[in-house]
Image (cartoon, rainbow, N blue to C red; front, side, top):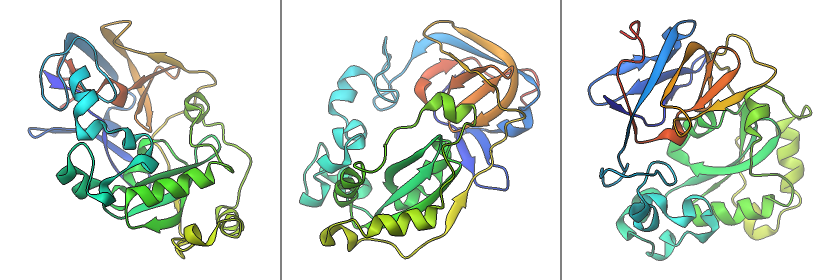
Length: 267
């Protein structure tokens, strides 16, 4: 048996994906073109307290942990609410370790230009997880709160959401020169925010292991069927493509228990 959690990735010429646990590491790229089966046992275990739960909240939490665990703090979604820099939060020690740390604000091209933030140590993992085609760092801040405040200001110009269907169909927005966009944007910021602007103009680009992008995608979920199977035809973000037409969001199913291996060819 295996408890699902988000796929691990490695930034190479083509992004490489893995299912990784303490006991094993499976190269998912090597399975592309092969049939796989994801069989849900009906059991869900909280990602934080490991107790059995009938329903998963957030990214794999039971309701109690979703309400109280620092890993599910409201500032995960709304970083401008972070209080780590004040020594506060659901768990001050956790906040200091994870949120009162250097963060970056970035522009990512998925299906459109979007603004986002992430801890500096999560580069480029965060961008791969969201299926970005390219990214550029806008600013570097000393903590999550300052990054969140800058993101709020930039939401006047850009969305912070991705149209997941367009991303998975590889439908890009209008062409944009990220460097030019970055520096035109800098001129519109108030002085207290522009102080964090980064001189780093490197453009990060990502190529995903997808054999052919579909014209339409249909989402599959264990909440509708305990058995999901088909030929693995690609991976992007945290999605598996099956039969060039269906997609399965691995991260959404964090802490769902599945039978292992994925297929007879998994090892």
